[in-house]
Image (cartoon, rainbow, N blue to C red; front, side):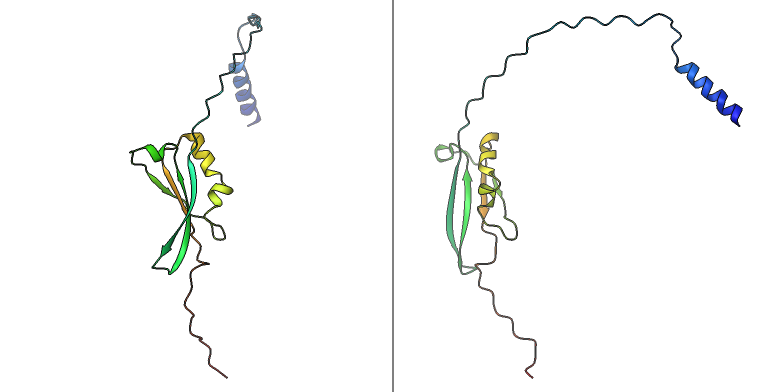
Amino acid sequence: MKRLLAATLAAALAACSSSSTQPPAPKPAITPTTAPAAAPAAAPTAKGTVTRRTFHSAALGVDKTYVVYLPAGYDKSTTRYPVFYYLNGLTGSERDWTHGGHIDDAADALGLAAIIVMPEATTASIPMPRRPSTTTPA
């Protein structure tokens, strides 16, 4: 078994070795080059608008707030824009996406041509009905 392993190893080494006895060709000399010129700074992109608004929900019986991002030029445009709805997390508010996530800055940087609506998605302001007690008086 050892002879078979040694023969296999010798064959593998022979196959991997170079049969050429010539030294490798010299590498071409590296000539210093000047760095490419920096690209000109991009023109500042137009900014969209962020507005916080309130509406009354008759179904819930409370006033709810929402934040809306409107892309640059929306007020003068006749274009129909897609709408994205972003909900806040469990203990968050409608302002989380703009204050913490800076979604308006990201949308401006991307040139996003869309409306983003971020409603108050918490239930803290909704009056909840009282549940009847399930315990019996003592």
